[in-house]
Amino acid sequence: MYGLPEDVIFLSLLHNIGATAPDKSLTVEEISMWAAMEYDKVMKKLSKLANENYVKVHISNGVEKYYVTVEGIRKVLSIYS
Image 1 (tube, rainbow, N blue to C red):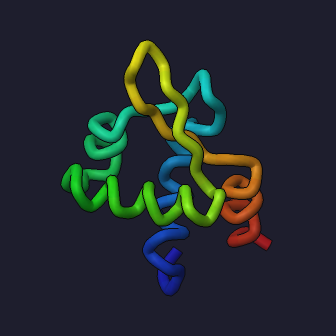
Image 2: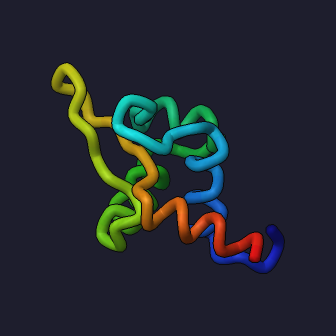
């Protein structure tokens, strides 16, 4: 994955840990742990990816959780073709 943009690598991480549907969405804290990144940096990346429609927010019991959209999954899979 060397040479890929940092956002694509981050999106790939979300995909690989299974955050690919609303019922599999993860909190920022969970994503921070998996990515070994600071909360603020994760929020910045999630915001950018959400603006590009690669990530969506799912509210579950009043808690924001994030998952990769179909467009995001396509983006991740495009790195393998």
